[in-house]
Length: 403
Image 1 (cartoon, rainbow, N blue to C red):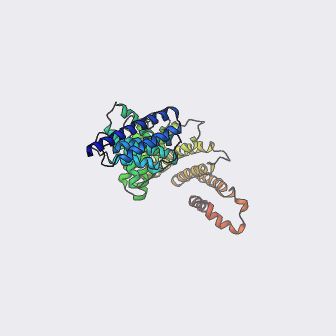
Image 2 (image 1 turned 90 degrees about the vertical axis):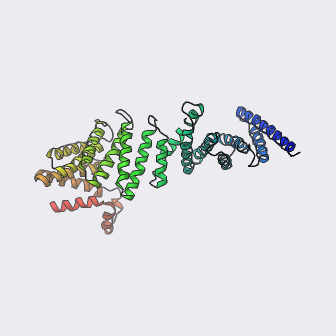
């Protein structure tokens, strides 16, 4: 008798499942909401008749979840949370030893990606990345399912969205960046960006912890990113400048190894070549290379370094006429280079020119400040403290000293 009742129940489950699939097919073909509602109703009845111990419980969860998910994607259903819960329950019933686990991983990852796409929930895209990280090794290369999972609506979408997340230097954030990098094997078009984002996270952690190993690893990843962007690649300049920054302003400042400074200067040279005359930001590139040469001159004393630094910064100044937003910093940069040469070789013309450049820079920074007319005489001292940077105050002291 019990077997007979179970047989009747299984028949009803099969009938309701078939009816649900038929209604769902109609919905896919016509996008008629009544067919969606009917499919959801049939699949819900099936789920109600399949307890957790039933062998078809996971399939019943998946059928209902997919009907609801497509309704959400096509904006016919507003709720996605229940759908994700259904997919989670199905995945929990399919441990690693079962052949259906990859499909459940994929289903949950897709649902999380869709919720992220509509609600911008960072936790969803991070979890989706972890799911794909488990899924891809279970999908042999060349199979149809691998192609879908690794496609533009699968892994590719998740990688792109993860790359756009803010830098997170926590253990969890760095772990995510490593996962995303593993989703981008050698040859993947998104690998350079993934390398750069991991390097960013390690750089941020180095700033907090001071652990040089993190900085070294960040530099290593950035070198690889640069190697994957040959001359002519649109992102090569970005990675060049990033690597320069890590070498010159972090590792060289931290360890004082002149090899890092030499490499940074070589990279500055290449970055400048990518910005020929007429290109925007050439002035900044000239100024940056000049600054690196000033630093090396202070360490090694090679006259050709300071001579070239001054030449580069003169060219940068010609590209920043009065009214240019970077004119004050360019004036200051050239003044620093001239003052450095004066301190070494005592050329009075360098000192006089440096003072004139400092004066103009200070006038732009202070006297030409856009809010100067609103400042009362009684508050000048306070405004100076607010608007004049520590660097500018230092230059002001130098100006007074030399005069």
